[in-house]
Length: 113
Length: 111
Image 1 (cartoon, rainbow over the protein chains, first blue to last red):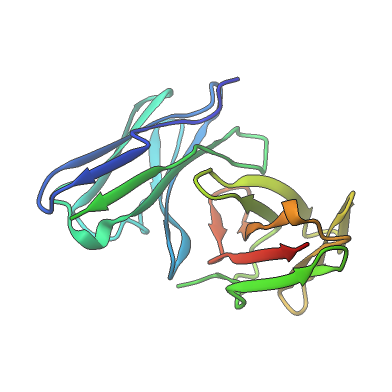
Image 2: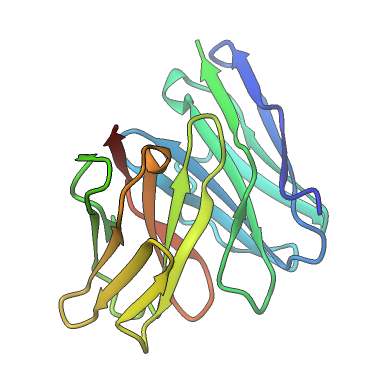
């Protein structure tokens, strides 16, 4: 199994630009999670989906952030417009319906200048 | 609202000694607890877990202890090895839904 695949691995963008992060979960997994890692808050849950439906988006920091899961094998996290304080590592993770363990991708390193 | 707290940002131990990483939680609905390990430039990887019906789970050099009354869990690594140097995240979930993480503790094992 290829694991959770995220792209891009690294992105540097200017303030005000739109950023789109992509994730392909492990095949067969029903749950998909987006986390953000910062020094102050560690791994912060932004949103999670079950069977492509958003279940809890209370962690999404602002309306500038949005996430979609159009099908079972693809999700996006979009920031529009981006700001320097959005600079962080964004992780996608997935889990199957019966397991308790979530599996992470390698992360997308975002720098907004 | 930090429901999972790791109050020690860093820990340094000598090779061969015991490493003890601590974690506290506030949500009494949490019923499953996990530890993840993260190396630089990689995603976190699962290390060990414990269900709320147990108070101890052991896997080789790694043991997790759970004290439900104190809402506290800890990870013991013995003996510690330089390759254990990483950031360790404590995580908790309730009713098999979402998973909440602490801020992480950076462990350094000195040769």
